[in-house]
Length: 338
Image (cartoon, rainbow, N blue to C red; front, side, top):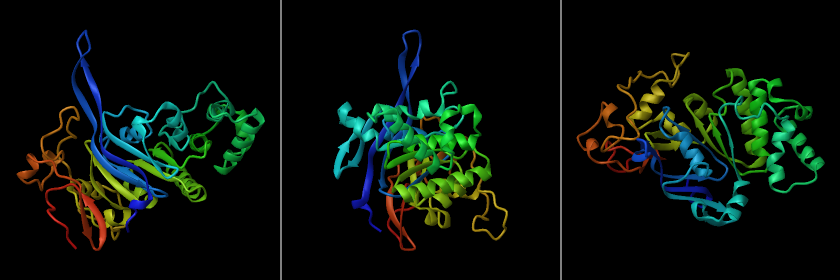
């Protein structure tokens, strides 16, 4: 299915490097290449999962899209009111308009709320910023939002320490929705919650997506959750996308050796489960992003590596598996196949 005409956000050769300082004079001696050349389209109305080990650059990519970290090079194009906007080149006034449409729910519900302020005082800030008056109108909007995320409206008068982790995350979701965004980054939004609470929050997010026509970038370590929650999944390794396909296709037919290893590590209870495949043990650690290996970034840990993998960086190429669109960055796949 071609979704090219339904693109909401387009990333082109996106790079985000962080300088490494050394010495008394803070001389730049290198760079941490957190995101190292990502091309990716996010389609309107979808949930795109972003998975990979810690240190692969997932959170940095999400924050880069929202302009919360500085972009080193490349382009982020946002389709706003049927016009393509290059986010890096926008004046502050135009960026402020678009920022209403792009929000984030952070991982830790305990650190994202100010313990010294009531829920109302901190949730009303975005509304004040964009000129919503009077105070009674802001309270009315927030009361409706809290009820939408299954929290009593009286919660506005309480402090964060009076709520559980799941309740705080619901409040964080309400804050992200307060300006009626169309794109939300969910940065490990359920990983700090108990399993039963995770299921409730995921169901809530799915309902909100349908009711508000939202687009999600869902960053997670939990691959089984990603399969349940996401339409497509991008696998990230050392700052690069190594595989991209529909969630069903990725789990039924992973192509990249790294994706195969990740999926083989999913715990299973039912021996007949489709995840009940031979465990693939990856040797060694993720390479230093300040000094990535030549060629394919995964080749030092890959048991299927070719000589070519040590010298040439594979490009993310479009393949077809069982008639389904599938992208993979690997020298093991030379051309399209059916």
